[in-house]
Image 1 (tube, helix red, strand yellow):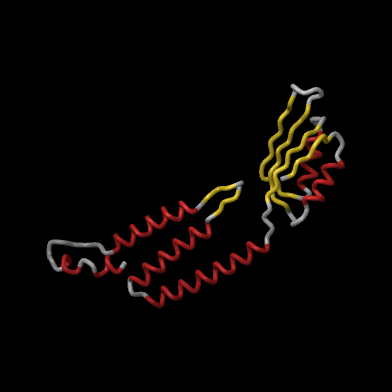
Image 2 (cartoon, helix red, strand yellow):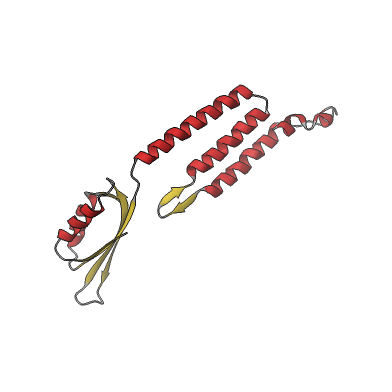
Length: 174
């Protein structure tokens, strides 16, 4: 920002040349946006790196502001960003965000509703896949369910509820 503001003073003195000092700042915003996008990762149905990307982008904006000579605005923005990040870190530590993946085998196709009702009582279902394996005798029905627990430590309760259902052959919880 300092270069875009003061670096071309000798060129600006020429009457036939007009420069826009905000062009370098605009490119900084684009470049930092690209770097921030590179920090965002989708892993096991979670988006990670959003806070880091936002922090990088906010830091570059604060740097541009201070480079432009607006020290009070830059300092105020720095304080707001730090307060916001501290509050967000405390909010996300409080909320349980454990993702579970389950694989369940059943002997009856009608058990789908029973399985889903039992699972919904303890977790918020993100995805589920139902497949029928006719090649086995008797036919088995395979459920793959992914979701987030409503309460921390409910894995045992969920397993117990599923195990009580009739016609369940196996339960695997990760």
